[in-house]
Image (tube, rainbow, N blue to C red; front, side, top):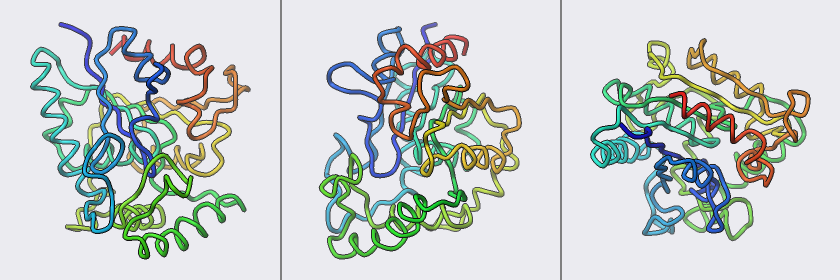
Length: 272
């Protein structure tokens, strides 16, 4: 039996390129060179996925949880019939969507070999001026107005992120960051469901320099909300022996990551 395949999912205002570059940098490329088959998902309308997000694009995060992730999981298992499962890996909001899918679908859990996340938080409770500017002012107040005018949030053109956001995804993520973990389409309560989940082996990674979007305290809060008492937690910080106090994106994109924490991730996957 070969190595267990890996599925990677990006976060909000992002796409799969957070995990790879055409020049061969990134976690996906690093693991592929080590012999793993890695699948990087661009959710509908983002990255290499077509059609692109534009005015009238109606899909939100609910479709990623209920449709796209289960569909891709089934496809990978069909392509790898000898595999015992698939490792799931999410950056930022991608980790929240993956955890939501696992909380909702008991039939998918046995085929998920592990859950590894980078800077993933379900709520942003940290208080600071930077958080007020980035989240309370821009994301919660200004971004919906920009999205309403154009029909979607043109984050790439505004140089706010790697990719765009639909109005549905934007409003749904705003509500989740501020309030209950409940599906906007059918009122499924992920928070209640998560309490009874037997989670796969999980590892949550946070960066010391990630002050807002994946603040270590908020990452730990998500672990507690999910009831992942046995999950591994790592803080990428100089005080813990790492080369840098990594931030939200550069924990995956920094040139030093391949000689710093990526080898530990490789060992994690090899052990699984």
